[in-house]
Length: 357
Image (cartoon, rainbow, N blue to C red; front, side):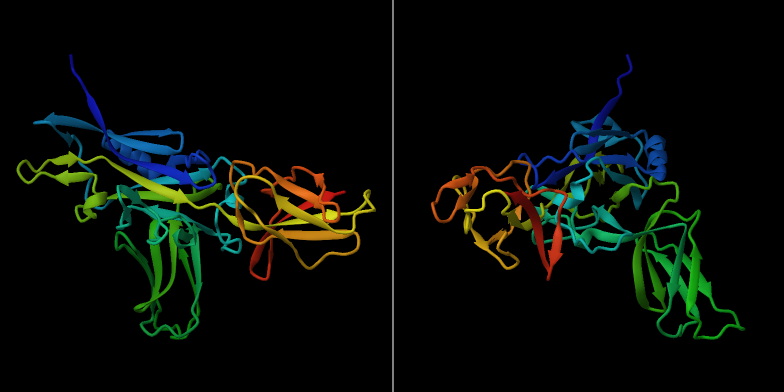
């Protein structure tokens, strides 16, 4: 009987601080068209499961070691598109609300961001969390560029970051050196990170996406094979004796941080006319302090948390609305901040909660 053995070469897990168990199942992973071709050519198996995806390779076992049957070529990139299953993901995730609408997440394993045994794919080397540093502009079909200065070398080029491929425009003899407008046709070009360069100066960085990619893509993960990969991130190791490639299965991590906001209760006095002042108190668990803030009127009380509070999947209980005069609760359990209403004022982010008493 012929036996075929597959082993894990790498997996990518998605974690999120919003969830009490950290596992994030909000992301759908789709191998790109090019990736699907590579998977098929090299007999690789892609499996997506809750909060992660895995790639397996067909191997031959020798002396207790697993050697891949169809080695990947140098600088091969397996690209996986990310789409969201949860419409509120970008609300409870710590992201810049003013980010460019064309920006998407980009992650790869061409880095050294290890923390203990965890191999992070985020660019942030301090918190190790995915965020604004991982955003890059996605471009499809064409790219337009307006030069803010002369073009001294009479050429503008797009250079791919990871392959070195170049798409160049050269001014002809009849064009003035101060030409400002440039347009590049990217249809049919490979996907990948690129930079637009004016001489030696890098003007813009972006990711060339496939025009056939789904519209709801919010990011991409590229897993590269290179012999020069950081040893901790290397999933195929060349055997110096046999020249075969031993599988060194790796688990990479993309960890998102949860957004924090100031909870601001707007309490409208409509039915309980005798109340002249109120307080909001946390009666159990972790202390949360609240204070009266500007914006109130005779019929509107505005009270906000003194510190920013994180969005989590576990409701915060025990927040009471109290009559300041009698110290008696008016509402024993106030609602938590909504994932729908966010408001930025003077650089501070608020979650407004509306109550009528």
